[in-house]
Image 1 (cartoon, rainbow, N blue to C red):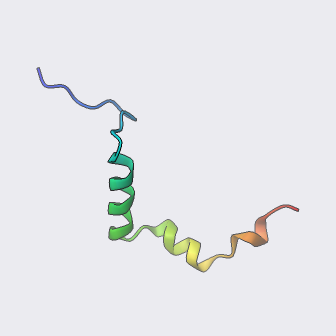
Image 2 (cartoon, helix red, strand yellow):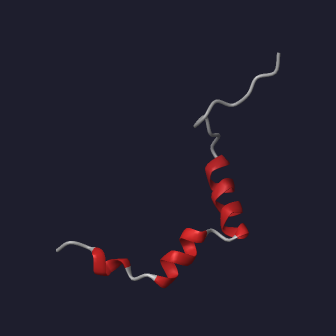
Length: 44
């Protein structure tokens, strides 16, 4: 029987590889971060 990775059972480099792939594909959150000054929403 074949074993599969469980959800959140990441290896050491898996998270970094997934995030870099997402950046290469055009992460919409990175584009949002470039256009919005989130410091205006910070509470004092």
